[in-house]
Image (cartoon, rainbow, N blue to C red):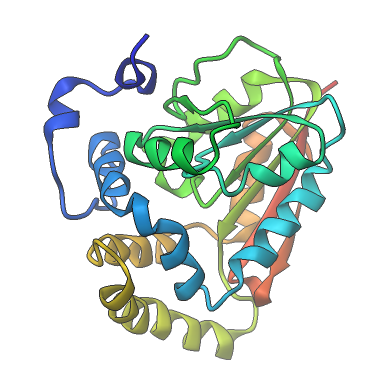
Length: 248
């Protein structure tokens, strides 16, 4: 099966070149946008996050707590940088993304990882095959996140655990104001200096601002069938880790 077919992308989508996606989050537009930024994606994120991305990735690994021999789904894995620590812990990690550009870069940089092209709304896996699943900064880009959460729930075994790492809402109001000004003003300006497609980061800023807060996202996870949902703020709430389990 071709990468494009596994990702659920048709020829029309693959042939399109878009500058940026919008808040409608058309899967074709989002995938094409990430294709364009794939080569410099990791470097750009480190710069825009002021070096915090490594700390956030480490927090995800601690929250997932991968054990040797476990099967871990890393959805929206991009170039696979987030997947490497799971493999290092002895887990069998499957990095999945629907941007073929990201997959190409990832396979070149991390040839030992079993990258799979896949759409978060139609995961190409059987029911209950993963011990844990994680998605970092990707749930926000899924066109229908209710379907995306349902798919994550489906592929986890009973008792399997989910960790979602996503941009969120700073809990201290003055800091939230400063952060919003950075997000909508400084972030696109910095992206123009370091990104291959700076307009993509205008979408990034808009999608973060429109994202539900910590409590609202926890409620969505509960409605999707996850139990024991909890969250922890990172960097003052710029990012939040949500965790839950599929009922045993």
